Amino acid sequence: MRTMLSITLDTIPILIAPHPILKAKAKPVGKADDATIRDLAAKMLASMYLAPGIGLAAPQVGQLLRLITIDLMPDNKPAPITLINPEVVALADDLATREEGCLSLPGQYAEVTRPARCKVRYLDLTGARKEIEADGLLNACLQHEIDHLEGVLFVDHLSALKRNIIMRRLAKEQRQKRDDDKRR
Ligand code: NI
Image (cartoon, rainbow, N blue to C red; front, side, top):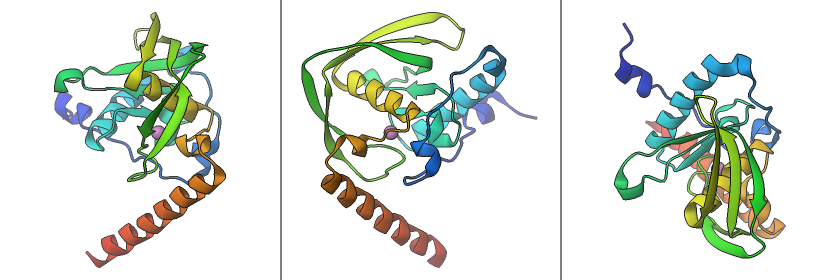
């Protein structure tokens, strides 16, 4: 018998770059996807908390759907946000730089410059229209996750030189990790 607990702990593997799905454009979520989306969103949140990370987009778990989960854990308490078909409706003219990482590029971090504020429209899990205005960490996180729906990774905002250094380092670390796993 499946319990509520086993459902909430059901995780889904996160794809590591470079992977063709991470470079593909995601499709809008339709009405027919309702049940799938609830299940997928729950699995994405569980995987995100386990990683641990603060944001995850459906393409990162191999699903080319416009679905994002975010939880910045304010005051160390869970406060998950699930965004279906998110759309950036406004971006600030001024820029902000923050260090970013990504669950699809584990262990890699870089300073990324983006518009300092954004306004995003989306549907929540009940199908209600929502709007969110963000600055700071939430702004960077929203733009980073929505980028994933377009097949864009944070390293794509960097110079080719910096991107290549990170991608080579990631490949090397992943190779080492596979070798270590084999030896265990
Ligand atoms: Ni990411």
